[in-house]
Image (cartoon, rainbow, N blue to C red):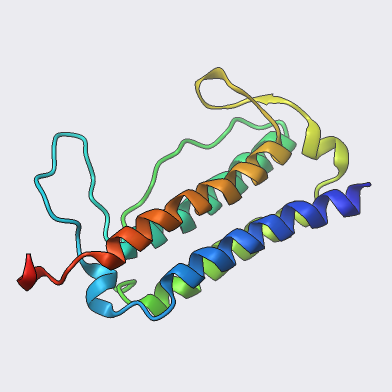
Amino acid sequence: MRVALIDDLTRDLETARTAFLAALDGVTQEQFVRRPPGEVGEGEERWPIRDVCWHLGQYDDLQRRVILAASEGRALPANDPTHRPAYLNTPDLLYEWLAQSRRALVVLASHLDEDTLNREFEGAAGRTMTARGILKWVAQHERNHIAQVETLRALPPAEER
């Protein structure tokens, strides 16, 4: 049961990542760094594709650390995103970041036993969570960003707006 469950979870993570990368296929550097147009309201962020990629890698890392802490009975880490280093500014470099962050999450998942996968713990905002639920959500969260990338890619170049 455990092997099939882990295989299903990791396959879903890899399928979501493959679909996300397919949405990026052929992205130009201009598309990659172009911010969506419009005024930015208080507390609002308008990410270019580059920052969506950074966000997904950070999300993988956060959820890996949450699962690890919960499985060891430690306090959960805070969601304290860091700024993207300036050199991570091209599709190739962000693809590498995405590969590294996902690999670490998949390796952790592959070492969890069934009890750990299904053990409930209190997560953010007092919600009951499991490692299994988090892994499923990570894949769905990534799928949710595919439409965002497709919309950003479809924006006209800045000089046409």
